[in-house]
Image 1 (tube, rainbow, N blue to C red):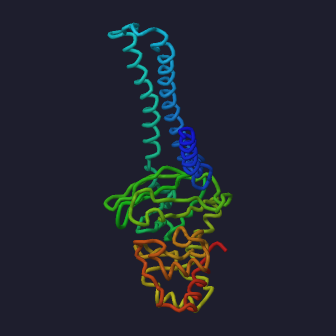
Image 2: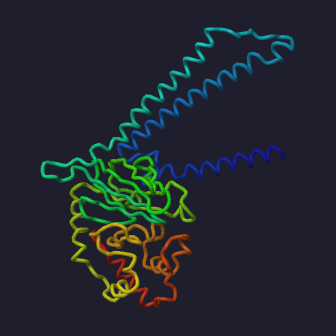
Image 3: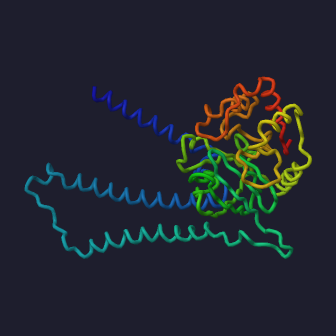
Length: 354
């Protein structure tokens, strides 16, 4: 009976570990497969701290085993009194100096990388013509979606961040409602988005997202922000600088040359959706709902649903069922099936990459 119970516990433990470690091998999501310089630096710190921790554990385990084997009562007898080491200067020096060395070994690189990764002095640098030398993205976290503004390029988009590879991309982070946390696990550590102040940091993207399973890196909200916190996802597309410049040009053209896949759907959008959403990538931030300029290019509907016409219609009809607590009203009963079909076809046709 006891043997069976122990086996059951062992299998349960292995099952939990399997589920926990299942995400470690996904390049688009795993912190253990860094895809940029910032992620690599943080991964190195993780390895260093883990090595120090394992060293301490091994030393303690070895001492513990030696004590059990050499000084057990059955071997030395009930009356044996071990050597008394109280007041030994040699031992006191050993267990004082070694922990200090271990703390210094961990503290020095941690302090170095903290200042290195927090250095945003180049964020506002401009060239001789007054043009920004580095890409800056303003990120605004909202319930439950993400807005990305490129202030120097005059572009606003949402839910999918597009960035060039192999250069520093600087971020201004703020929240519009409650505290959130901006996190792209494979590329770098998280940073809070607060309502009352702007946090700044940079990331470097060194891997082309086209080669990933879903063609994107996964971004997450790492701060418990409400009932749909776990669904507050966004995606990141990385590309060479030349392709990124083409994307910028295409986005800037959406202000005047918007491709319309379904004119009837566009008319419905103007009547029912334009109050909260925009379909031009050129403009200002502050919209009630996400900018939909590149909706046809996106990887997901509402950040986590399959990017299909059927899922889009279901989202428009029942947004609270899929993402409780979001601020989009449901359109079930307000639009006919034919109108929803036209609207979905129009939105799926909003593209700058196809």
